[in-house]
Image (cartoon, rainbow, N blue to C red; front, side, top):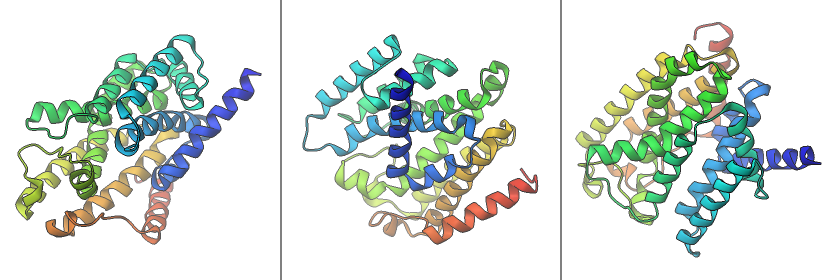
Length: 279
């Protein structure tokens, strides 16, 4: 009967992904079926931790996070959890031998969001991004390479850079909500209340460098993963392009997005690029 419980757990992770991120779930569908569920399992875990620190304002976030962390530790130790999301996650962690230090780094960054509102130095900024984004890319890479440690080491740095690029685009896109609703500023040495075009373009140049480094690894991913990751890459690249063209004052006052119509066009372009072996 454990198989039935695992299936229910996997369904929960898949539903969480589809409910919280239509863009990411669309990219996951471009992955090979034999690895798709494991990426859902990772996303479900990441999403729940993030929701605790970002959304549950009417509850004691510290207590909720501590409880989630305790349940996570038990799930990894016992290889089962009555929390379906954690049960699905531990399954993937065990299956692909995902290092617990990656999970610990992620939880550390999430816990910072409970209390820390400003990142004043580059080292603080980089440490937060490593835990909140880079390690998620590494967890996914573990799934993509299916135990090929040489491949993992070869693609590790580019996977981290791509994770950083995605996270920084999110920071810029969500600047208004992070600053006004959560009182957070992630970019160091930048006064977001006075964000100007010079500061915006400096941030974008940093992100473009991450994208370039990430792409260099993307093209060497296993065939099962390449199309899905490329789809996510193109989506975030398009979002960055829109942010680059948007005046800094508008970024501070609204959330820039890619329309559904544009998404469909991007996904079609990705498909033909992939089929023509351009990547």
